Image (tube, rainbow, N blue to C red):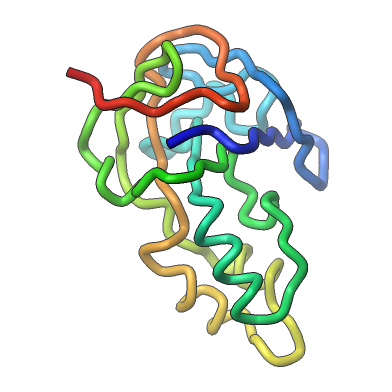
Length: 152
């Protein structure tokens, strides 16, 4: 139950940048990410997705495995993210609260579409598998390899 990869997308960048560690600010998200400090939607400041779901999608459609394809910030391994909606949890020393599922949008559908897989089919395939939106409840550093734990 660990963090496998971390990505940010700076405000003007068109693609994500992989990071070994990032600074997280309570109620604001990841420093340097395009959604840092945004308060338009609940839990938009940090998103998590399961590596296993990305790998399953890639294998199902014969695609190369690329853990950045969903544009989520934190790729996890061994964590059932859907179970964290409405719950507090720890990643390393940082405390988070799962806000809601990070359901797929048409943008994700268009980004992952292929000749044999139109955008609506991509969106349908990722329903309830697209990850978790969360709020950072503490400030500190988040690193690849950090372990998940339940917050007591």
